Amino acid sequence: MQESKDLSPEDPVPASIPANPSVADGGGTPVGVDWLRNPVLNKGTAFTAAERDALGLRGLLPPRVFSQEDQVDRVTLSFRREPNALEQYVHLMDLQDRNETLFYRVVMEHIEEMLPIIYTPTVGRACQEYGNIFRRPRGLYLTAEDHGRVQEILGHWPAQDVRVIVVTDGERILGLGDLGANGMRIPVGKLSLYTVCAGIEPHGCLPVTLDVGTNNETLLRDRFYNGLRQPRLRGEAYDAIVEEFVTAVTARWPKALIQFEDFASHNAFRLLEKYQSRVCTFNDDIQGTAAVALAGVLSALRLTRGELKDQTILLFGAGEAGIGIGELVTAALVGQGFTAEEARRRCWFVDSKGLVVRNREHLTRQKQPFAHEHPGASDLFSAIQQLQPTVLIGVSGVAGAFTRATVESMARINRMPIIFALSNPTSMAECTAEQAYTWSGGRAIFASGSPFPPFRYQGRTFIPGQGNNAYVFPGVGLGILVSESRHVTESMFFQAALALARQVESDDLAHGRVYPCFQRIREVSAAIALAVAEEAYRLGLARRPRPNDLLAEIKASMYEPCYQSYA
Ligand code: NAD
Image 1 (cartoon, rainbow, N blue to C red):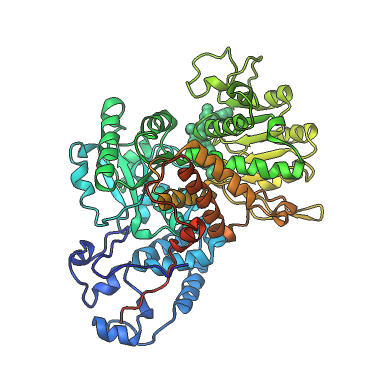
Image 2: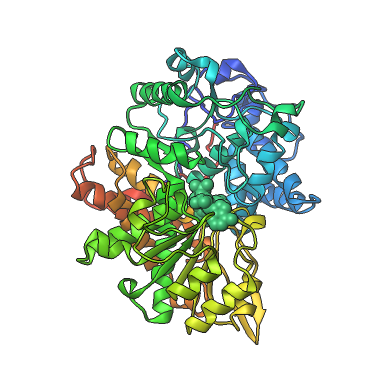
């Protein structure tokens, strides 16, 4: 692993705007206190005596010099003293704004403890509260009022080499709905995970919010809401701002990967279709979720000793996540020689109007291929009775939808029912881990979108897997970056799913966990990156010559949050 931080003091480009503009624009050499105010350069009490002399810092810090290890311990202890998860989130947010290297070191060393804080579920709460917890700006805002000026505004971003952009319009934040400009914390959190999980350099990451208004009445009335106080743009005006954004990005950063995040489904599918063959882009809610879910199912089948082709998969929720999963399962079976129609018959959907079947009216274009010839069913329980599914996946955002009767009937049908409650945040999960295990008599193979703690039942400890796309998108991004792929294809997500499933060890499965331990995420991301980059080379999409040892190249490119020596 390279001891990264290949930044010269002349080119510090943090994702937040440093307090001192002479440093922010990359044009001036930092002097004295600038070193403390710039989160990319700042080492706080870890500046050595020689550095303090060389940089004009003597007297500006308490005299004792601490190691990075000491700093990590201090931050971790004070993090643990915070009274609740939101305060812990603010604590880490402050650290990221103050000392980026330390932030990444702390999170990497305590990934399982801190992931639920910087990501789901707490990040959802942070978005809801953003007007109240706002400290310093992070990321780039483009608004409905910026039409015609997007290129110019992108030029305000100080980084010369942006490689990954996560963009949201805040309309469908986790399962929480329209949070408008407050959704910014999602791209910020996702990009932190790109760095933590896959070692993508922080200064190559750009969080973007397209603030096209909000239809959330509570926010519109909220005195401290940060975004535009107007209803959402729709139709041509909306498309024009997205188009201007994509065009401006490709002009300024032609190698950048654009990840669309938490758009409502009526825009998400359209935008993916429009841009996926034009630029290097993907939609994580549709494609990343699909890869994670498929990997979980493949691992679960190692426990049931079943094969994908023999499964009946019932998806509760036919939105971005559900349809994405259906399409990737279809692609997997087509790869095994089935026709698309035969493959799709393994996947069934229940949405807010009941079972998706052929004679239902007003089905969206995405649902139609999965609308099979079959009598209707008005609810999930009847659908289970009719279809006898082996796999039940919740991606509805409907808390508690997997009732006791639902889980019990899955357990009557199957020796080991596969039940994934993938909706986020925790409060939106279709059932809890405890419910899945107790109601199935300890036979369910369970995974959830947000984490649940281990659960002891009948003398056995179950560790619920976290079926969260955090397992996939960082590695996919790394594979794209290393190969400089022109596009992101569905086959890359299929390869990512296979690579993720391969990382699950027998010890994981022994505890009912269908995903690898999150502690191993960097190794897992490197394996996924390898699979994705190999696919880019196979498809002729890579713009970079293939290195002899691709895995070594991937690992060498991964950022490590170590302090650079300045003296
Ligand atoms: P979406 O809005 O596109 O789709 C939601 C779907 O749920 C729609 O088909 C809707 O008809 C259906 N639904 C709503 N109420 C229902 C009801 N009462 N009964 C049956 N179906 C109902 O949203 P999405 O992007 O597909 O996300 C859905 C959920 O999945 C969210 O909670 C999201 O956080 C979660 N998700 C999890 C992950 C993960 O990594 N675990 C990834 C993406 C999405």
